[in-house]
Image (cartoon, rainbow, N blue to C red; front, side, top):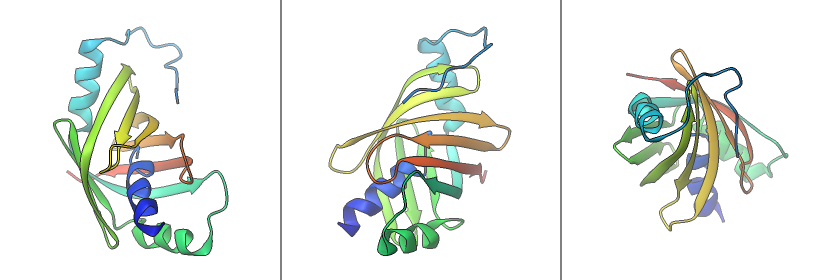
Length: 145
């Protein structure tokens, strides 16, 4: 249970970011906007906040507290690596759509289970929402480099 929770925590706090719309954006989602969003995501990010939609049991809450401010997520191409005190995950992600500062995507754990996210770039921050499983909620990544 804890191993699966660690995998999902890495994905949820990334992302980790179902679907936000880019209200008022004049850009249309397509291959070019997806490429641009992917380029903006490249590099290293630190997980600075995550608020689950539902209360976590004590072990998962402890895991979350240990990772906040410590876990980094590095995006390289279509892969990510999440590293923190109790996490070291290498896997892949895919951006399905992007408009302006908004993106929608799917992160996969190491066993291939998909987790849907949406996010919004905000300066050096990526504000995200995770939609699946125990780790449904909102969080913030801050660019490290």
